[in-house]
Length: 496
Image (cartoon, rainbow, N blue to C red; front, side, top):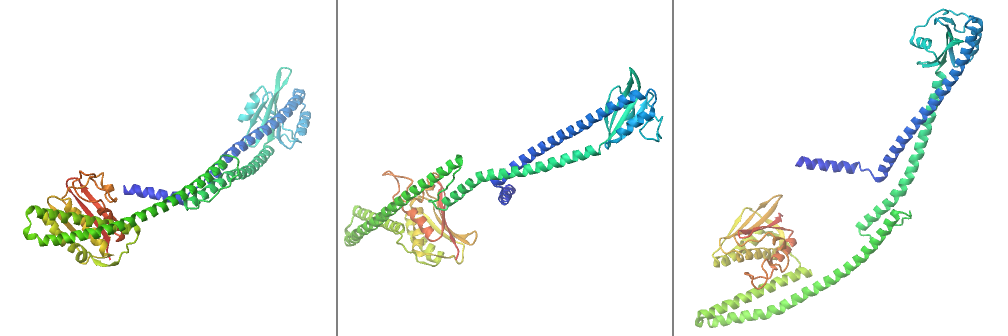
């Protein structure tokens, strides 16, 4: 699995390093296309022109051999060698002709056009000579260096001999070489012109695309007044117009969102101020009621029966619940309004926060016959944090653990986590949390059970405040829970 991930990362890195843009792709594709097309056209032109040159040479050769055949027919039967040699000498004045031969009917050389005639009466046994001797018509044969043309000589209907002429291919090859050079040069010129035209065409396409890309980047960076001017009278111009309309619409939408945000912030501030003011207004008379209730209870304690004692307990619990709700609302209001200023200092998690809270909440746990234990695995768990919010954070978590646990107990662990971090875990054997509700656990006023039929008291602010307190102290909170089996809340801090 790791190898596959490394391969993918390496592939992406190579792609980024050797990234080929649209311009380069178009240039490569069109240049390759023009090269193939130009090469094919050049080869076809060369072949056509070579064919024309060869056909011209062959036509010229056939004309000369026909003239020589007619001359030889007149003189060969009478062996008028001097007259035949004279005709051959005239033919040899052509620079392209290398040799001329006249053979009798037995394929013996009569004359080669020279005065010495050293090869007279010689019989040529090579394949080309045999082909010429055995043919009853003009025959064209190419060797590496010559074009050999032969024709039979007839007097009336009787064959009296054979004539042959050898044409040098040097002139032909030179002309073919010239044709090839000219075609290659013209092909390269046409390719260069084609690539230049392709670049002009690509510029017409890629320049508007680059403008659109720059405009998109500008919008991504928050520049919404960016306008793109493209005048190509095609789809790219339509795309630019659509882009400008989009940026205008986004700008209008953004202004609307900013206005709505300002209104929402103003409303939220008014709400927080209202809650804070009302909480203060409620808390004062509630404290008065609680104080006078406590005074009355102490005065008549000796005269109270069980029913009156229970009534005072109900009043006391209700008052404390109301005060706790007010405290939570006040704290949330301060955080939302931004009026709370944390006082950061060096704090020992064990001595200053966890141990005192565990001792305090043991009384509440024992009232429900629950165990509450604390295990510390760190000698100096020092962090930088705000003491008040840290106390509130863990007080809320401990209170919830006791509230939602009916049997068993709560275990608190302080231990080291990875990368020089401390983790405080509060594990209970309570009712647990359903998987579908965990995502909403830290939302304000959110509770798994709603309405008047819910089994547990609360206002849904405790865990929302816990989340905000963690953020204030640069801490992370995680939850593991299963319905009916309990929950584990873990808070992870960076060490000092």
